[in-house]
Image (cartoon, rainbow, N blue to C red; front, side, top):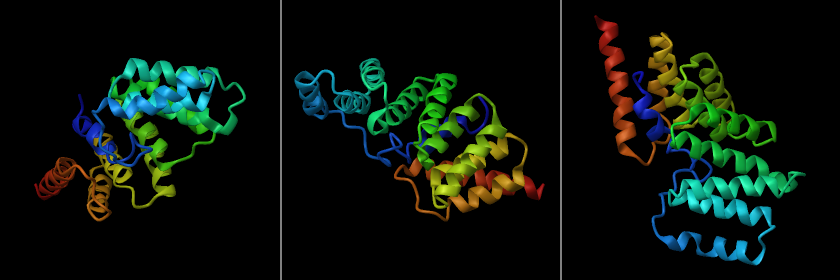
Length: 207
């Protein structure tokens, strides 16, 4: 595994499950009670299936989550309310968590194609591409995220990691510095890791 990839999951946890912008994972089963009831009452309701899929993902029941998200897409062939874009985004997040980056890339790209053009989607896509060592493509996605949200810590940190891994240490150094100037992530370990990468690059420059 390349340097930095141990940080990617933690860095992007500062985005949603990225949609939720760093909400803590809820371990209580109560998080799925209302969505389950909604599906029991309206099993053909694509939005209810989507919400149940997201709820399952929050408690890390990934197989159940993916089944509900796929069913939500199946029930909504006309993409009413653009629900399929959100379903694909969350599918991508689960696949990334399960270390299936190639499949995650497909899901994120489908979300973008359907119109979910969010900095969170671009950052998540950048992470999945970087996990496949497709650094040029990852860099483009992180830049797209920053065009939408210049203060995204996840995008700056991910861009810095990809720049460093692709052999552009000076650009990476600037991005690390910028990442430390925007609103910090909730996870202080991530902040510490980025600070450490910046220190290492500065030390190397002095050699």
